[in-house]
Length: 171
Image (cartoon, rainbow, N blue to C red):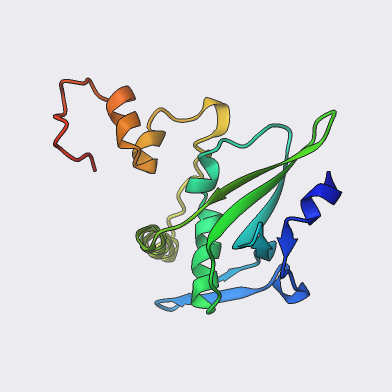
């Protein structure tokens, strides 16, 4: 399977493997070491390699804050990016690789930066929030459609149909 996957990668240079990226956020120094930055299937992609016993939830890549941080760090360092990805080696009887791709919007980057500011302020005050589990673990979260902004899924699973008129927007 490695021989098949390696053909997907182009324009990968050694300095873009585990490259140190930094950015300043109002005096807070943010540092990241993404696994790989290059072209995958012809598109500029940041890849985070994972190993797992089972497939990742498809929404995990969309909500993953590590990938959001890397997207922002790439842009802050003048490096263009078209998408981020998890490349997951599934440790099964017959090992295989699964890919999950996503993009980040400017709004998502700004939300992430605000979260970093809030966490940094809490740390300065001596407050350390508990780590929450991933939305995709143990069957997922019933509120996942809200985080992803999937209005049809919100209407279909989280509200009674008569509660929200079709012409209203859910935020």
